[in-house]
Amino acid sequence: NAGVTQTPKFQVLKTGQSMTLQCAQDMNHNSMYWYRQDPGMGLRLIYYSASEGTTDKGEVPNGYNVSRLNKREFSLRLESAAPSQTSVYFCASSAAGGKNSPLHFGNGTRLTVT
Amino acid sequence: AQSVAQPEDQVNVAEGNPLTVKCTYSVSGNPYLFWYVQYPNRGLQFLLKYITGDNLVKGSYGFEAEFNKSQTSFHLKKPSALVSDSALYFCAVRVVSNDYKLSFGAGTTVTVRA
Image (cartoon, rainbow over all chains, first blue to last red; front, top):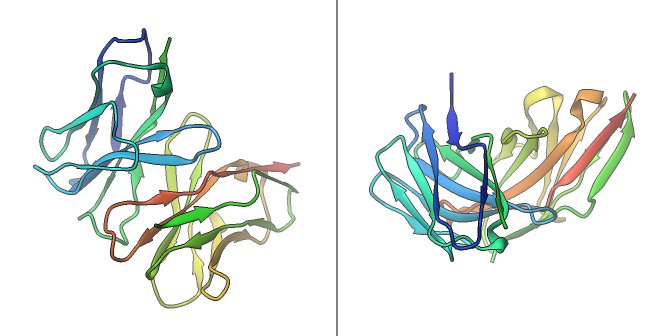
């Protein structure tokens, strides 16, 4: 009963390096999301994918790209990491993308950019 | 624009006492409201939601929340708190006309002392 799986759990990058955060869900959910969590700011939406084949920007998309590889997988890429991207990143999914569907979250990736 | 506010950064209660975590929202349409809980080093877990109907909503782990349209509030309550309820709690709102973007509050840390 894995739910939403994120890899890696921890990552340290130097400024300017790139990396991809991986996310996979096994609940057959249509919609997937990437959030970042910063102290005192709650969660902010980076990108989302309402269904396979579509992606859209959220509140804070600058510096990120996403790929909805298939129905299960939704990756987040940092092309040139900056210290401001130090954060905890959460992937989430929801059934059918409906407005009343709760989100199911992974356990997060803690990223530090030095 | 939709927004949600959690006016208290921290709530401290004794075990067995009632617990209330406050949330107010601001949306231009009818809101869908959610509460999530986050335990250390974990992703958020869904507690309950208000979509329509009864203003008192019951959720997981003995929690409930009351929707008050006139006060634009959705406070989370538990009649008798447990030490294991100590966690970070997030309120979130989704506007009916905006399917996928969920706005989160900054979070309230609840500490229940034995």
